[in-house]
Image (cartoon, rainbow, N blue to C red; front, side, top):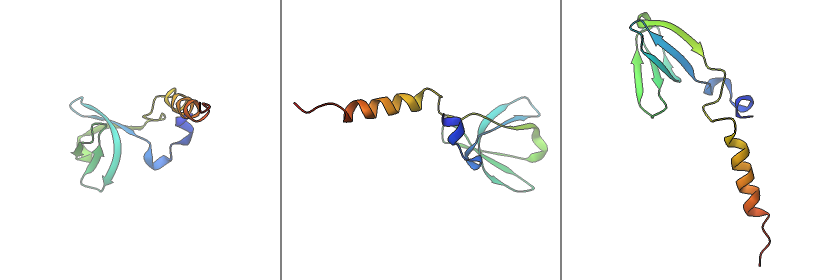
Length: 84
C-alpha cells in the first residue's frame, strides 16, 4: 500500500554514473549544470548531468510494503485494549 500513496515528487530516482556508481535518492535540485540528490542516509550528492549514464524513476516507496500494515496493527492493538 505505501507505493500507491507516494506522491510523484517524493518518488526516488536511481542514477548510475558513467563510472558505474549507482545512487538512489530524491532529486532536490536540478538545473542544466548540476543535479543534487538527497540520499537515504540524509547526505546530499551533487552530480553533473554529463556524468550520468542512466536515470530511472523508482516505482516503489522507500517504506517496505509490510510496514504500513504493521504500524496500523500496532496502533489499533494499543487503542482497542480494555482498561482494567
